[in-house]
Image (cartoon, rainbow, N blue to C red; front, side, top):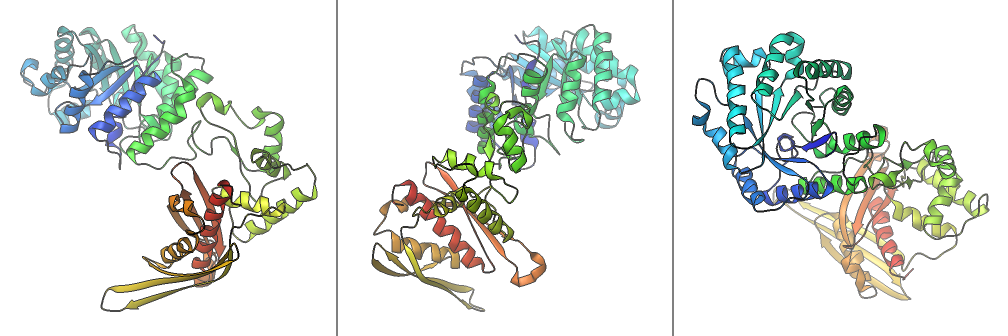
Length: 521
């Protein structure tokens, strides 16, 4: 067992985050992935609080888990009743998990104002619940809610609450920085004091309201904490919980604490959970984000190619990520050479081709183009500047019309496209939900007889950005299109003062890129 264990509460605390929801099947799939990754404890939810959590524990009990202990979460007994008569405590046992985590009140403010019981009764509630669960053979973790806020106001009572849990047999007392407002120095100092008082290590559970959830967790580990609780991607109520995806590599790579996990699968785990939660990936997420090891400035790219650690704090492969070199108006010729090499295109440093490509990139970006998310458009640009043929058809003309009937709540969008394909003139008309959709359909109708494979291409995302809003309705518009054929995804970009023309550029590049990859360039 690692000297520091990982406790994941994505399926309980994480789902309290705004916009986060998992079905029962989702929860099982996340738990299975966490188990494969090597997480030690997986908190499945609160038995009896909702049907999904109840169903999860039923399903979890049928499975054999490789590394993780499935954990049920609940509260201490209610005030002024016997623990064996508390239905919520009984549900914790009914969940049939090897581990139970109970949360109790530490802050006198909550005890008297929320629970409305005496401070002494609160201590009894903690001790009774822990002892009762231990008597039924469960491993018991005690979460001391609001511990750091409480300690700031009343250290003596705060220590009494965790001592009550520890003396009653809790296998681990976990200090909760529930409001997320403490700073690392305070967390480290208090954690040391609690460990000295109890004579044993504690766990740490932090929130990120002050932006230091991970830093606070690391500070507690420095002080001797032996467990870190958090969520994948930092999901959680308000700002979120301590992000395990960030804290794990910091513990293992920076602090030298072997956790027994496969770090090379970290990025995949992060993306998997985002996908099931239907949450966009944070491109700037430390370690696992798309931009985490992306280099844009020419000076940076030049240095990284010579010695990676000049601008990379760890090898991206250690966490399952990879280095990305982007092209922009900040690029130097090294950026162009790296991209060309990745595409298998021979370019020599200092050659006229490189200078020409770089000048064209800078010109286009001055007009509003961006290639960071439109690498398909950049590859086409690169090949065109090198004299390679990329187009499978020639545009003769296109136009769109929009007819609206006020008061009738109806409209018609029509597009006409005239192309030359392999010496054959194609003239097509189609209607769509909007002018861009109509244009896309008319273009495809013209090309399908010649290139049936484009039926697999689907538009995954369409974004419009006004570049120079100060120009009002005459402003330039940048359109970014993300397309997919079911196997790979690519981005293209167009810029114009006319949003339809910008969309046309991006649509054409998307299909040309696909056909190029099909060997029809």
